[in-house]
Image (cartoon, rainbow, N blue to C red):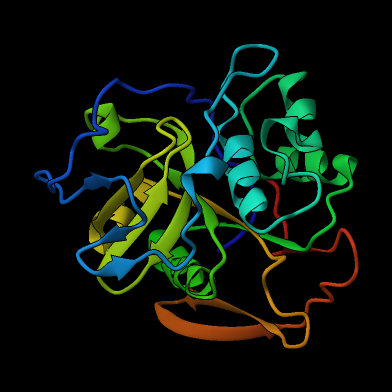
Length: 248
C-alpha cells in the first residue's frame, strides 16, 4: 500500500433511476432510504441531511472527492467541512478545476487549514479492505474509490464515494451522485469496485478517533495481515498521516 498519483476522479453524474431499487440486483446491490439492511445498521450512519450532490469545478470536471470529504467531514463536525456547500473547502474547490488525486487533495486541505488529522492511502483491495473495516468499525466514514454501480447501469466510472460500513458480509456507501440514499452490496462486490482490479484510493478524516490512544493502521503486506500502531496527536491541528510517498 502506498501513496502515489491516482487517476483523476472527475465523474459528475450518473444515470437517473435506482432510488426505488429495494431488492438486490444480480450483483447483490440494493438501494435503501435508511442506513440499515437486513438487520445490519451502518457503523457510521451519515444522515441524509448531511448528504450533498456532486458538482463540477471551474472547468466542469467533477468534485466527487471533495463532495465525499465534505459529507464525511460534516458527519464528524470537522471545521472547514461541516457547513456543507458553504464550507471553505467546498467553496475553494468550486473556483478551481475539478478532478482530484492524493497530492492535489492534500494541497487543498493544507491551504484551507483543515483542523484535523487525516489518513490517505492507495493500494490493492486486499490491502485497503482491513483499513476501511477498521475505521468504519470505529464509526469513522471512509472516502473510497468506486469504478461502477447499479446507479450507473454498471458502466465503468472513475468516482469516489463515502463508505459507512464494512463487515465480513456487507458494505454500505453514500454516493454523492445519488444523495439521500444508501447503497448496500456484498463485501466481495465492494472489493471489486474499490480498485477495478488495479489500485484504489481511500481517505479518512480522523476527528472521531480517540486522542488518548494510538490509531491502529491495518494493512496487508506480502499476503499477510500486519497491524501497525501509529500515535496521532489529534490535538495538533492540521496533522497528517500518510504512507511514505513515491513518485509515479
